[in-house]
Image (cartoon, rainbow, N blue to C red):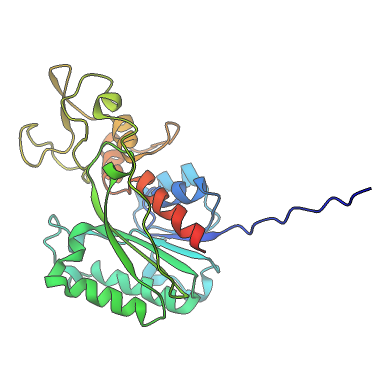
Length: 282
């Protein structure tokens, strides 16, 4: 009788979710079979949404008070670190803004825990902020630890979602290996599909972190669309779909808070496409 060979189980890739928001990284990595071993988010409303939907094993509030030895070992460090210091809305103060210095907490974790790889996300303006000096500092801090460093400007609309949302993705590996970005994908839905009616735009505006409505014809419009010939605003469900959140995702907060958190989130399919290539490289 032939001996049946046991199939070797692939080890589960573990990750930590820093500046976690409502868990866009968590969903993308979990969809690929990775396991979150710690999350950290200072915003109370975002933590509430995160806990309801993800039930994290370890949830911390403030990265600046987090003991390095208390962080679990992990393969991949994920962080959508605060973008306001580098964005137009945040006046581009960069490392002169206290939020900008939070990058150095990421640097300390990489240095202390030495995960196999990192995956960072920020606004596209970080690439050219302060004449490119900000990006040079980030790259220098990371490469001095022995990691490779690769950065890309990524649009959500190149990864299936009907939203422009250009963002800067930064990827690197402890063994210094190279990284090739995933191929672009066609739209899976248009704004007409999202809005359930005829919309003249296939690709929608970039969602923002709430605030007052601006006129639909205004340059700062982010949530107003013409649908079947009439003007209306996005619902929570529609905004969530534009970011790639599943239909059963729960928002226990107010409409205003839900829209704020969605505007501050990552585009899940874009994160997942890049994360898939990262996991394949580990």
